[in-house]
Image (cartoon, rainbow, N blue to C red):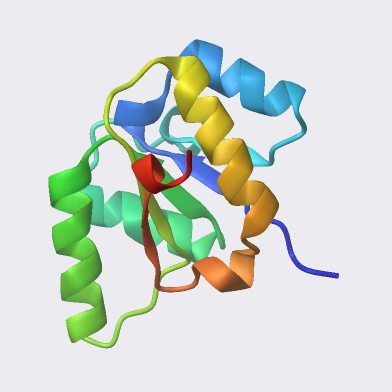
Length: 119
């Protein structure tokens, strides 16, 4: 059986309605608030998510695209990154659920996914 994706929502992605909707659908997730990492830099967020085996979800596309590239160039691994535009919560949720349904945690290793591709 494939290992399901576990999410880590960074500070930018902590929408209460999104968190409630994902948890109602039994998505395993942790937020930056719950981890005590509010206000920490993006690299710390990615390090934490990776250490916890969680795919980070963020609206901070530019910084996490850069981090993804830097990490791979420096032979650092991560558990996965999903970036999204700031769109309606229902759209984000449907796309995230589609991605989680199709991809496993292993599939996400060292991947950067643009949620806009998951329609």
